[in-house]
Length: 412
Ligand SMILES: [Zn+2]
Image (cartoon, rainbow, N blue to C red; front, side):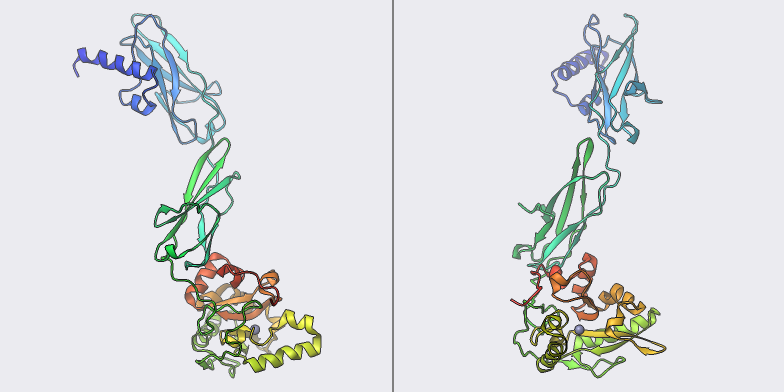
């Protein structure tokens, strides 16, 4: 631009700013000098969002031609050391304060002028802790995904938005999301937005799920995903697995479905390799007829109420699927009992590591109202590697919760 062209441009800028047509960022492209008749006193104001991390800009209008401007920024009226530019990026120290800018205007034509802007609103703080959420649950049609997040600091109101391959899902704004058939093959994501008065609204996004699989089949007892509890008997009631075999482990003599049997061999070996100690198998597949005698035995010896808490009616036992194993800990003095297992190092190792072999501890402490059974740290249920990993990563406490299935405290 020639010198003659500069002045009309500046005038246009000043007019646009006076009319509120320019955002601070647009104004800054030409820097914030504006000029009008020198009889008017300069006016300073602050553009930008008063929030930690944002940049404020000093906007001055009615500046005499060829005037030199200098700036100082103030936090609640107290000069901020080193803040002498036309812009100020707000730092954590500024949170809650009101910011002003004082502009000194030096011109050959007038006396030196000093003008101070009106204060900003109190500066919004950043969240001190803004955790990234995670998605728990099985990535399968029909399953329920759960948003989990560590606590925000300070405490925030959280809003959720689930997305399908990056596109927001209409109405999916709760902390849980049940996967439908339209989700099959897609990756499901989640964004959490945290709000709090006086704090910068902040979003965090979870890593999306793997591609959503078809529904988990819970009714077919030949599948590792079968659900068996007091609401879900085996079907048929006298089901017998077709692929029973005896795992090559201590306490052999009990049979499991083939996949569960080989996985149990690896789990027992893994415990020894990890120096957690030896395990022994004390029960596995039980036929309908045998379960009937076990259950009736409890009823005769301890009464029906006791039997219902610790044992399943025939046709309702996981042991009949060939996917459940009861284990005990063994040491120098031989093997312990099931009831002693929970206090052993082997039990702690199993609780932490069984998922790596495709097993879960099926009846955890605190879950009786869901599973229908008192805690059984010795009862391992094979659900396969994929489901067991998702179960572990989601921090689930019962297979019912994992599947989004209703609690099964008692028979229908
Ligand atoms: Zn058992």
